[in-house]
Image (cartoon, rainbow, N blue to C red; front, side):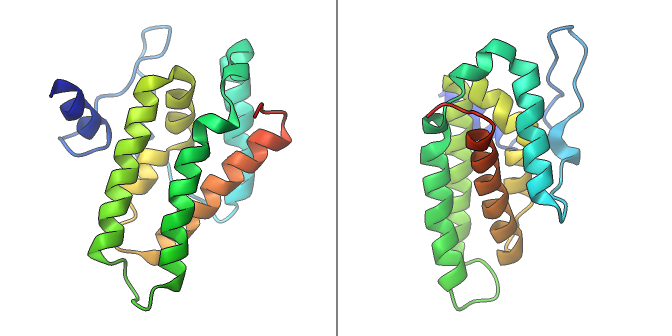
Length: 158
């Protein structure tokens, strides 16, 4: 039960999240300030390059297959979003986005490299800020695709 509480806390559902500490013990800047820019592809490239630098040899453990399930879930939601007739996200789509957050948190708990990726890319913060905006979700989905594309382009393993 505590694991689920922790998962929801990390997904932004229970109060403010305390800043994570770096290896030096100093608090890192919270990802709450992370937002997508219009040049999200450049932003995605920078995230992956920074992750490669930060993880060093451990980057080899960050395989595309570790994030493929998440990307597949994002793509399924994206297809429904672009084909939906409403101007805003339906309650069903918002529920699926909430579940996506839970899946991200779960994967973070399983794999340290995935956690570093999710934090560096600001994925939970971005999902928390989608609201009922179709445009925000579309931009998030494209950013997620760009992250995976740059991971592969820059030599990420399958």
